[in-house]
Amino acid sequence: MSELRGALIGCGFFARNQMHAWDDIPGVSIVAICDRDEARLAEMGESFAVEARYRDAATMLREVRPDFVDIATTAPSHRALVELAASLQIPAICQKPIAPTIDDARAMVDACEAAGVRLMIHENFRWQSPIQAVRRVLDSGEIGAPFFGRVSFRSAYDVYAGQPYLAEGERFIIEDLGIHALDIARFLFGDVARITARTARVNPRIRGEDVATMLLDHEAGFPSVVDCSYATRLETERFPQTLVEIDGAAGTIRLDEGYRLTVTGPNGTRHEDVSPPLLPWASRPWHNIQESVALIQHHWVETLRAGAEPATSGRDNLKTFALVEAAYRSAASGATLDPSEV
Image 1 (cartoon, rainbow, N blue to C red):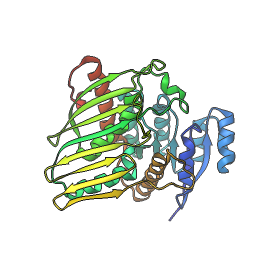
Image 2 (cartoon, rainbow, N blue to C red):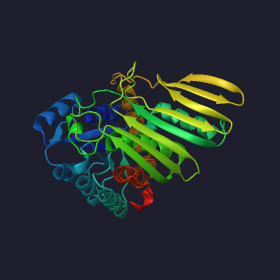
Image 3 (cartoon, one colour):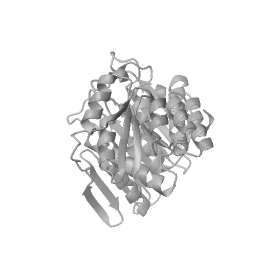
Image 4 (cartoon, helix red, strand yellow):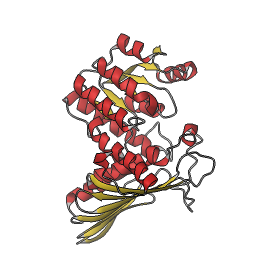
């Protein structure tokens, strides 16, 4: 098994998780890192013993010629960085959201496909082990054909403390969090024919929406509800848990608070604890997301070595991003929209 040499662009809040996860994968090394902020660059380099440190991404990629690049920057920089990687024939795994606009996202996917290099979108909640457990039960056929689904994320966690930029954008919860829930809905229930969305801003100190409710009509012929909130105060803070409900012709699946999976089928009801493991470098309550980072990066490495298409490829993620755009347009107009037409 040949070693894969990777490079990281962006040494911010979340990138430490990626670096820890790369360290855990045999045969993978991050050999160079890049950030415009010299202090962040130095801190990351010292923490993970990376000597090759750059302030300019193009210089790093041209000099190092890594086997892949991990783009851990914010969305406005993604298109230029992915197109740069594609021009140098370097596969890219890129942080979500894929881009600020659907046109940028399509251009990124087209650039990588034209260059014949892989593009995968990072940090999708579908990779969390509790969500994967739901999918396995659904695939088993135990509850029969589904006729209703719900994906719910409701919290009052101060997400702005670690990522203050989230309070500054005109778009917030659908773009930052709803994108995960919408992707889970696609992962569990299939692609979407129509979407209707409503949004609200409860917190007066932010610019964007912090509450969103979306009704999805799936191509499979049944609806699901996706609801997200960072303004919901509960007796027990659930952050960052995603809850799931699925009703089927022969039973139900419930992923409830505390990672409790309940399956009711023809043979009765069973309960399972599907709590994610606490990795050595992880911390509660983020360990759910941190474990999914590790699972995502393992998948990326497997696809690179096999020459296969990642499950959350750029092309696949365009469908999730189209749902995000359609949700915003629906919320603004009150209309029900076909996401394939945005």
